[in-house]
Length: 507
Image (cartoon, rainbow, N blue to C red; front, side, top):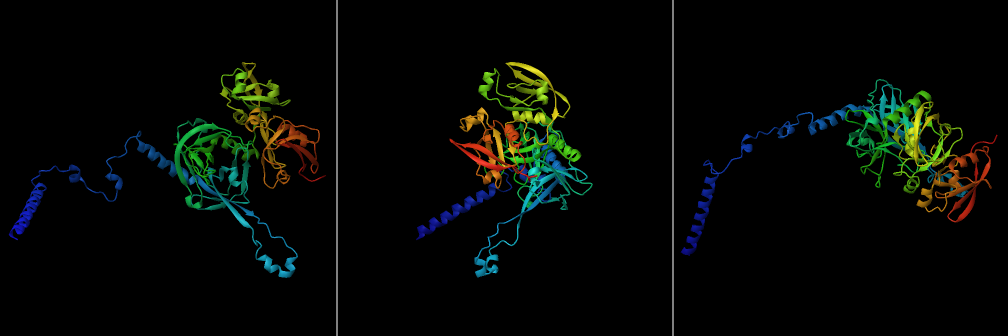
């Protein structure tokens, strides 16, 4: 027993001695090093940023960029508006029948939709003139019956005038207001790939109004983005600044706070942002806006050629160093191109010294030129480069597509495209004859007659073959409104016929 007590006493003594040594080591004997940071630390409760050892100074620091973003958002946000587009959507009614006499109308009315529903779409817009002019996208307002503009301060105005240009997807909305916060406009031609830009708009819903995202200019001059709408004149700025549904019509601004683009679309597989967004350059948008306001229409330059892309095989056959430019398929008689001496099989590679990448690029360059002005075309003919002087004409208002590669036959609700060798090989069509149906609008004549994308129209009438969209239009142009026409089509290995009616009233 005594031995056990002795062991316990010894253990307590050892523990006490060790504890005493530890106290001494952390006491005022200063046998351990102190932290100067702990000794000098004074907490600042009201200004958390002052606790940081890093304080922004100097124009070249990252903090200068941060300050620029803040200033841009503060300056540009009041110029961004929310555009609400509403239209009535009619619901189909249950048919009335003989059973109503037995059950009574009240029984069936409970199943019938008594009121039409209202469809609401939200988009964005940018105030560009103090007296109420707002830039946005055509697709934001095109289907609207009632269009409301909501300003940054919450004030709402009904649109008193809406001017649209579907070919560039630009629209101008006018509201009855003065002294608005108009944004400063920049020069989109001066934008450089890699330059910082901010996207401002109203993604998804009214709860996320006036959102600001940042990114860079990823590319310029993007074309052939909307292949399902070949009539669209494309010259997009590509950016990785986050753009989502609802941002359409919003602003793309540079680090000077200047408007350089109108946000328009995204490339996505999910339906949301995936790092690739597109904006219409402000230089193009401004020209369209001014034409719409001053002339009531958009005045575009006209060359008068039908053309196709140059692939690697064509480039090799024509002794070109690479595939680019626009290969002329046809020259319109009496057109500016005809008078300038442009010939079939020429490859147009430059306009005023600027390289032509493809037919869409040439179309954009020509349409932005003023009618009546003289310009220089560079073509490859027989392996040699030649310069031609051309006086630009004015594109007819009813001309759907200058390139001839595609065009819409909106009278029947279908989109047509010339069959190039590239298309024939890509889709295994087996021919370049006829015109290809690429899209059929729901509820249209073409849809009712069961015409489908992929069908090839070979004849208009029993004995009139068509080889291009232009020939198709010329053929149907010989008929009067109300006339019936017979189309011959091919689907796979089978031929079939469809009767359509020329729209309009018989006279």
